[in-house]
Length: 328
Image (cartoon, rainbow, N blue to C red; front, side):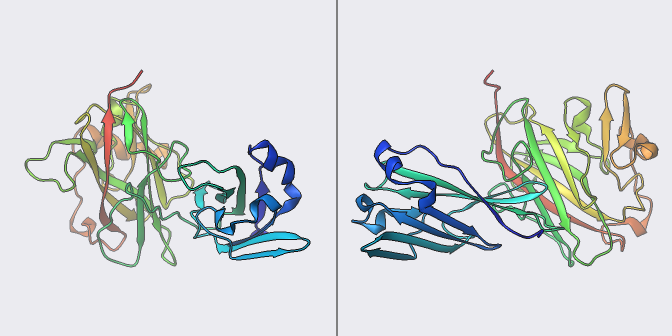
């Protein structure tokens, strides 16, 4: 069954005494779509204080101490107990640990048992990353937009906001189309700035300009990556020499557009250094739409303003992030 949850368990290192008294058979885990149920047969040495038993940050939801042995049960939603959720293109993964802490933190636990629940990612699911790197979207309409700085394999939010010079800043943007007609997500403009709001005094650096041209790709390894579907876009932005050590914000203009109506003002263009020419991300055979990247890609008329019926243009701000000198 496509939505059937699987449970994978990996036994980790604990003290020799506890390991000898607790086997995999002592812990039973059942993963459901939105919750987890753990039954843990407790060794006598752990029964004195059930409050020292944890699933992540949660205490046992039930504890029994009878003649044939003690048992702790944890029955919680996967949204609680500090479960860590990561997402790949195929799966949603929830991870946590059972621990026994005879002494309070910062003393380490004497027993740990990692728990991992894996589920097929629902069709059409888009991660709404909740972190300081998530874009603040302003706009109107029924479409839901997302933007975030991710980790190196685009499977979840970035774990750090510090990027050494020359490393890559993985940026993801997507639109939740719901019942809307198919749309293509474009980054029309992105500007790096030292301020969360651009003012005449802000130090700025253009990244994407001229209606979707990745200008930074001409002098770096920055590139749009191939799409998995039209409603999202991935940008590998190489950390650039700009405001070193300071807070940097990336201001972007996102456009949801008719995928059958790409033109010289609604496009995503990479610069191919080997060929010395611009290429259209979505269809290299239409790369003529990118020929204006080195000149001016002008507006074609009133019908293609931000309020055009074919799409919607919104603004997002990512950051702050910090670019540092390469430690190498």
